[in-house]
Length: 216
Length: 215
Image 1: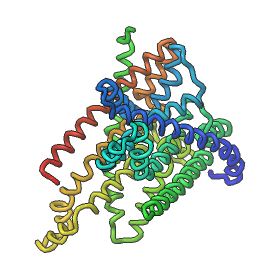
Image 2 (image 1 turned 90 degrees about the vertical axis):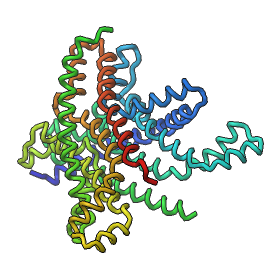
Image 3 (image 1 turned 90 degrees about the horizontal axis):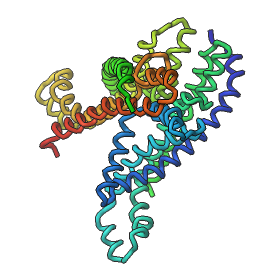
Image 4 (image 1 turned 135 degrees about the horizontal axis):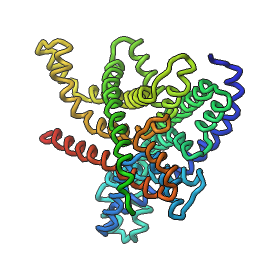
């Protein structure tokens, strides 16, 4: 049944693979932060075609599974001559998937900026770019930071899906250990426990930051 | 591009996907209420148990739970079929998220409603069934709608534990038709969209329908 000595012997491999999990989370999140902003801006565009395209992308990406999007990027695109490494396909897939969610988060933040702020910026003769950078976005993003933080945790928990496109992160490492030794129990349990500890700790951290943020 | 020859297999996969979705939805829905009520229980042990359930299934990811139930559990002597493991993992995972929806919706019903029901001499069960739940359900609706869509998308992971769902058919087709992978996975994305988007539209409609006349 459960063997502690085996558990300890697999721990270094899984901890090593955790680096990849965390790296993929961070890079994927960076892609999503930028992509989400592009989609949110596109959706607000006065150009009907751009706004329609942005809306369609958001709705389509949100309605289809991440796993299939990853397969499409990793197995589908090479057929038309575009190929990625597992890591690139993984972070691009994660990034695009969550940018559709973050676009909605940004939108709610932008919609919550009082109308007077736009008028004041216009009255002070700010250029359009300056108005967004200096007036609107700082006020729009600050209140949604905790929501962004929660999405970071959600994304972290989705990274094991990247094992399906052969990226060696924690779950893939556990699977490889299992295949080699026919002992899946310890390795998979270990991965579960590590995810639980990390995501629980980070959700506590975000709750704490949220409280601190609200006080100032 | 002629995709017609791919369709029969994909339809076959879509049926499995829908089957898994519906079964898991039933399990998740029941667990949401069970765990949601448990978290509001007066008994500390019941509250603790449901909190542990929530944190464990929310904190570890769905795919890890799926693999654990299918590959690790047999080593403890419990062997599940792929369908059972898939439905159990999806049901338990989304049930955990759903329990938070149920709990917060019940808490969101104004206290005066409970007090009024007590003043009318309603029994606790009657109070819940006739006064609290009907109002809480309206609050739950949008969140449950989102969870239903997430669950449908989540079923694609059962392809990784050997279930022949829509995604799995794609991987099978890929081995035969290596040059057509773009078309295969593009079609599968469309299939999922066609299944999930009506759900989105229905939820938006229900939301508007039920919130009509409310402030």
